[in-house]
Length: 436
Image 1 (cartoon, rainbow, N blue to C red):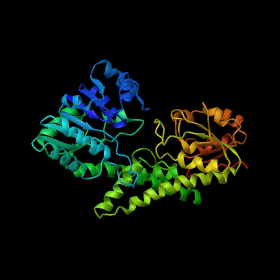
Image 2 (cartoon, rainbow, N blue to C red):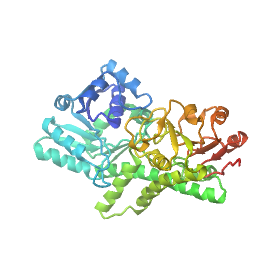
Image 3 (cartoon, helix red, strand yellow):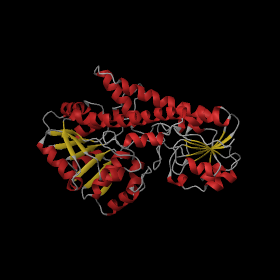
Image 4 (cartoon, helix red, strand yellow):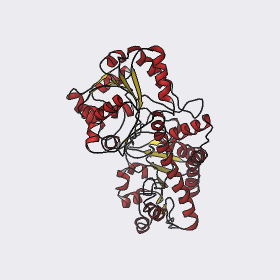
């Protein structure tokens, strides 16, 4: 099939690369001409394992191309994906849909008859209805369909998630659209991955409800971890014990510094706003957002309690999780400024984080590897669970530190290992190893 994807950010680029790899002819569109030029050369602006290889492969095979000309791209296909950004609005916690509606207006100007517009962007309930209205106002006689098809891509494993989805969710009742979706996702359907056909509004809500549920689990286990620390229990045993219940399952029960990234905070806030709009308050979700913000701030205080002021600390990892360069709402953006304000000498290492223009880290020093961060530090703080941190030579780390203290907010090391090496070790929801 010929497919046009409007928006060449994270979702649009992953979707385009994977659909082109399935044999479809895909054009990814973006207004940013410099981005399009770089993408056409196989240079991608984000870090996502396997994506650059997949993009280059399908450019070479002429299944994937990039353009900044939306009119010609729309003329090339009747299948149109909308994959533009829906960030949190600057005026409040609702989703900023300006790019979505601008895209709908542009589509209306060059739309082919009987086109199918697939909304891949994460949007509040009712957005597909509004897109349909905008296009119909411009072209009242044109036949087209708008369907909801939210993405469920985890940063760091997006290609695997696209190719091997837990489910494909489609909001439409149109037989024509259903057949087109089946052809688009023929590779996934052949492997018998579940596909759910529902209404547009239900589809839109499934996306928000899914991310909000996962955010709730993260905050729940973090609060249980706080209790474990007070009473001397082990949160990993708690998570294992409750996760073996088939009604609960083990996923998203790892205690840590809280959630961040481009999805959970934004989507939870937008769902709260939808609840307010339709007079169905999402009170539990409000508590989740508040709890997550408090946690990130409290962790800075916890570090200060361990080391005191006027010390030198090394930070390992600042992205919101491993295998991504995404800094959006990362816990590090709350924790590190608090340390800097207390005259803590901070050095940072992260394998993929962009070192430029992070105002929150002004005054910290970036290093090229973990050992440079650890050298002469009074404390080593682990904020992101990169695999290379799990494989550090801990004996070497201890030898080059001024004081052998590790504050591990990802629980990547075992208590026994830390005790055997005689580290002072603070983790989340587990006993402190204290060598004093």
